[in-house]
Image: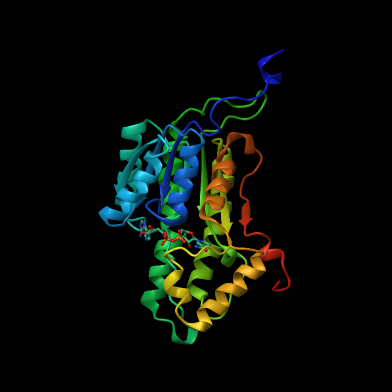
Length: 280
Ligand SMILES: NC(=O)c1ccc[n+]([C@@H]2O[C@H](COP(=O)([O-])OP(=O)(O)OC[C@H]3O[C@@H](n4cnc5c(N)ncnc54)[C@H](O)[C@@H]3O)[C@@H](O)[C@H]2O)c1
């Protein structure tokens, strides 16, 4: 039997993963999912405090994966250049990047929108994704393909997964800044996918459904009846409560060279929220 006809074995994701927004929340869940699939090294890029960074790092190391933390702001180009350089200095390359740094933005109707709030949201959620993509792609273009490509399939120099949202497709009153930024993430992802494919780099997006992370808690205001009601409505439409590691696993699987023809896609990981025309 030839090798190509045998069962696959070994770690699913043996490369090196870099995650922006990786210190906590969905980004950290992605880091843990990579660690569980045998990733050689994980790089957490964030602007969090020491304690949050330490907890995020421990979550990865507890699985037996090497992990480094880099304090870098995705809105600052020099920070992102430094973060990529430090990651490569430590692990030699970046095989899987997940750009999950993000903020909720203001809850305000457009008529009350403060320009500074609008701009901050675009800076982090859209420009931050652009800068991360730019410097990750530059590194990936310099490196050879990861090993373990299926016979006959194209090599993969790298994979980038950007964080979009249900708000890359839909909106609701009061979330124009976040909605616009997440639509922009798809614009960046589509162009990057077409620019990247000639270099054997895939660029996709994931749109998580509703997960009660520290980003959402202050926005939803679970202390109020109105907030709890809104959240219950979201979860009902999603079908159930979701776990952070469900996003983590989706990002890992999307990053594998076996997903070779998937490029420029927006994978909704929302239990059917966006295809549900009802509320149940
Ligand atoms: N929670 C959800 O239901 C949900 C749904 C759809 C999309 N998202 C997206 O998921 C991503 C992760 O968010 P989360 O819900 O896990 O919240 P979170 O607040 O726990 O995580 C976001 C992380 O990004 C970091 N960050 C913020 N600004 C940064 C900057 N300028 N530079 C570097 N890091 C920065 C934060 O410090 C934080 O650790 C975001 O892009 C968010 O928009 C979340």
